Image: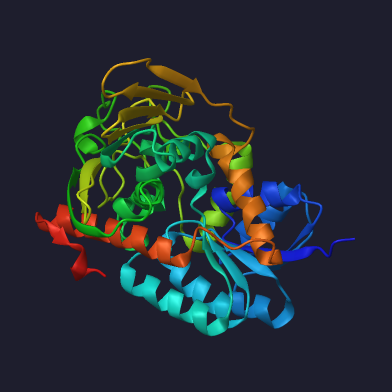
Length: 401
């Protein structure tokens, strides 16, 4: 029989448990040996939700003293990726970081150096590369169906106000900015689709235009303040944007967990302190003349990534939500729309494939194609976009890399 991989999850929030924990639990060749989270309430609740009995830790040091691991998956807030990954690699563990690599390029470079020194694999959780629609799109590009690609865009609509303005994601200090936290996914997809051309410069605009105290979606009653979180808000019945925690959520983020570290998951997204954007646009120019743009908004109920890839033979238009790719030839001919079959699983079946790939990489059955160097490039593009948006200038990538 194949020896079971011994893996640990560091960071037992929604992504760590509902995605990686649930998927790993279904692998007969994997044992979740340990869970680690600085919040003792949350780490205990995570094991109960997964219905497993791993060893529980609140520090990586304690875990390292007692565990022999083949690898770890890091799903902490972004600001902790550097410290957690550095410790893990020093203990000789293979690492999967669920994007981004780090909150800035300087830390990313240090992680790459440590991976080389420790001789371990440092892999990035760029799950969109495993999305069947994007895999088909990449094949069209690689096969020359579009000809020479010279321009591309992604218009991302994400019903994510609650995701990004109610939680820790709203904070620049914890994310390095949403162009890194969220945008690194999309910058990496551009890099990957286009064969990793060298980026030259970045410009961006971004702001909070809607999710602030001036845009509450209900009338206030005299003397009654809203918030501070949705579960206790007087106006929850009126608010179309309420973010109520379920009984299962409350096991991880209820009063007992809040008492342990002060973190509240569902602050009012209109009143929360925030210094990240709720919408923005970024552009990248590459050395071979390719130009790409990324539009993102976290307001409204529409959720989709809409790609347009322009080549000198054809244009491809893509909807991840509808699982379609439409190819329009340059000089006439049939316009063909492909409906791509999507397997079960999160992010269009991509999450299960990401987990399978990491397990195969740890076993030495294949090499990682989502490398730390790719993670560094995506983080650097996000960092450049953050500098551009905050300093109102175009940023040369030579400043970052």
